[in-house]
Image (cartoon, rainbow, N blue to C red; front, side, top):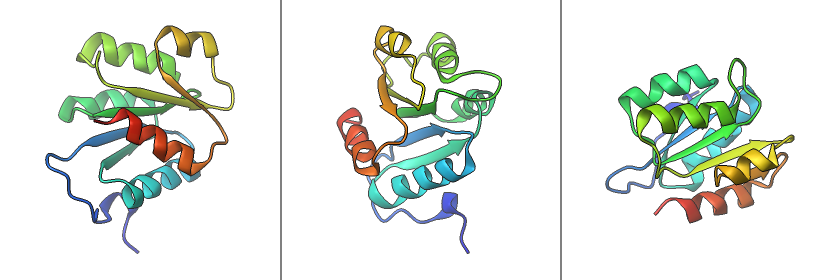
Length: 132
């Protein structure tokens, strides 16, 4: 069976837009990766923690960040703050998802918050609104 990260994307925008997904739960991460690969023209990159995300942005500039709030070692808000502070991602939209969203922190940073569990259609529609 082909790895989800290697599945061909039938949509080929030019230039290819990249979505960085940071999710530590393997079942949720693989579901999001599959949905993004099959239902959008974008290239998803999935990592499981904030430190991997910081490494990933050294070699690629995502057009959208999607992060879980509850991550090991660094939560999604801390990750977002570090990305904005060190990698010049001020204009890169971000979605933060959790069953326990810190609403005040999400609003203060003008992030898009998705409460888990969410409908995949809602997730995909939100992405389409954020990527030009």
